[in-house]
Each structure stands twice: as C-alpha cells, then as structure tokens.
Image 1 (cartoon, rainbow, N blue to C red):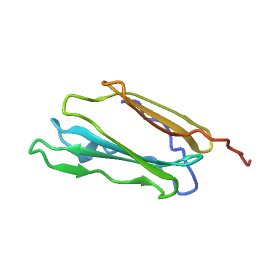
Image 2: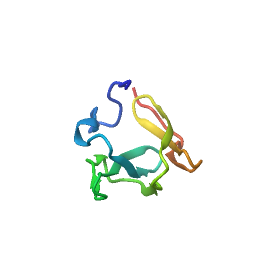
Image 3: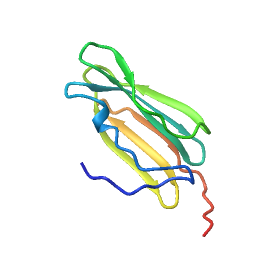
Image 4: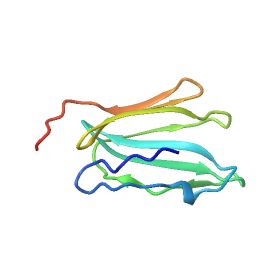
Length: 111
C-alpha cells in the first residue's frame, strides 16, 4: 500500500491503522469532520464476530461531522483528496456509487 508523507495542521501526524485490524474485518463506517479543511477521519470496522470496532480518531474536532455506513456487500473503491500544507478536501466513493466528501473551501496559505 503506498504511503504518503505527513500532511496536515500543526497537530497532524502520519498514521497507519493497518496493524489494528485482522484479515476478514471489513470497513463498516467512515466518519469525517470538515469545514473549509479536513479536520479528521476515522474508520469503524466490523470484526468476524459482527462487533463494531472504532479505530483511532485522526485529527481535530472542528468542522461538521459526516458519516457513511457501508452495507455488508459494499466497499471503498476510491479516495481522493487535495493537500499542500494542509489537507483541504476529501472524497470517498463506495462500490454502490455513494460518496462522502467535504472540505475544499477557499484556502489562504501562509509561508
């Protein structure tokens, strides 16, 4: 799996949740918080016993929370975003054609 370098606000850091789930688990929910920028992302997996397991919340608690619950036969097929000094947009598309997106407002960069 390709890994990109860290990007985000002053409190952001790179992360990899893969060691936190086991083969056979599925993504059951994706939650994002966005305003002008992407504030956070969090995945919830369903384990083989059918229990939901929240993976760590990555980012802050600003913006508006949005979630998408995936059906048992649905999976993520595409994730797009835009980043520079900060992550300012995200779009997540499922195999059923549903899209969860946010951010993308006007951004003023300070160098």
